[in-house]
Amino acid sequence: MTPVTSPTPQFTAPLLAPARLAALLDGQAPGPARPVVLDVRWRLGGPPGRADHEAGHVPGAVFVDLDIELAAPPGEGGRHPLPSPAALQDVLRRAGVSRGSRVVAYDDDTGAVAARAWWLLRWAGLPANRVAVLDGGFRGWVAEGLSVTAAPTRPAPGDVVVHPGGMPVVDADGAAELARRGVLLDARAGARYRGEIEPVDARAGHVPGARNAPATEHLGADGRWLPPDAVAARYAALGVGGLDGAAAEPVEPGAIPRPEPTDPGGVGVGAYCGSGVTATAVVLALEYAGLRPSTHPAALYAGSWSQWSADPRRPVATGSAP
Image (tube, rainbow, N blue to C red; front, side, top):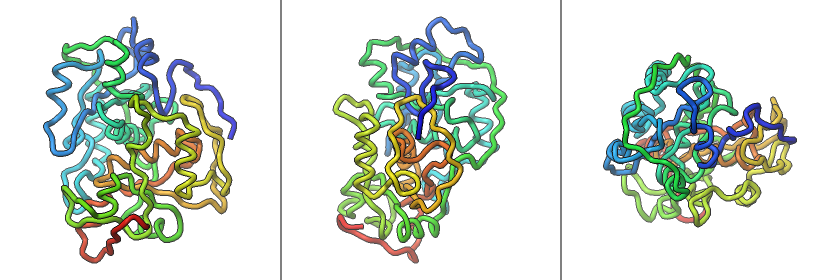
């Protein structure tokens, strides 16, 4: 796969370095050229991230609540079901997202919550080269000595139109099929995958046949993403190859893969986690590493373990083996 350069060289996807975002924001008046920045800080078990946002955030960032705005109410679809297209459109418009916007999302942890925003924007139909996650998140931004403000952000309403279906989704049956015939990746920590602990969901363990790929292992000691070839090697060891069964060339941050409309003979790949949030970082990682181009992303099991474990008809595996 031969990368081509982004039409906007400073804006890179799916990851954007803090210094590049700062350069894009510096001196830009509100308008189409200025990226929309989403602060999606969140932590399992709380407290909500809004207080962190109000204490200090990237200048111009708008806080978006994962539990309320990037998910439908919990229920049969799991703890964080996908929001309805209409609800997501309202959220994005309030945040100032328009049809031609470039959007950057950040959290203050592993980037997995920001990846949920990235994934939803792509699912909503925004082009791959206009959506990114801030590499290193808010901690990386602060570590580089970049400007932080507590001033409220009041963006002009956007006019984005959500066209759902831009990213593939599977249900529980689809996830089971991927585990049997393809590669189903479990993004949770090893202890949860093995069934040693289960802090929130109905049963401990994993989907039989799923392979453990903790999303925390995408990062280096500095909290930034590892180079794409290192991420690619990790997933190759888990059985994920490039399209047509061959290893794909890693894609440097910001490069846009050439379209590959089909995957003849390729192995299906999907990801899940506890509730459909952290798994989106695996989808992003496979694209970043060049193993799946933006035209052929890995599938997300949106209900994830929170849905699977709540269904007594679904089998559960424990231990380190798939």
